[in-house]
Length: 91
Image (cartoon, rainbow, N blue to C red; front, side, top):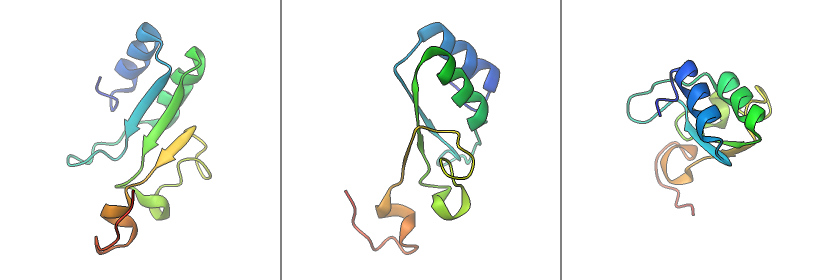
């Protein structure tokens, strides 16, 4: 499902009623941005948990939970961007 098209994402979430919706925003490698608030609202309507892979955005640039409050879970890949040089190994 193309999560960057809010209407499509909302329709498919309503249709499939998943327990978990996984979103990567900005996406890698295309850097397409998802309307996290719209997708989160659709998740709430069906009782789904929304997880955001915020690796590209990093917690410095995009505060998905604290600032925007538009996700239930947020994950980061420490092996990519948190260290700034790619020299950190994380699990």
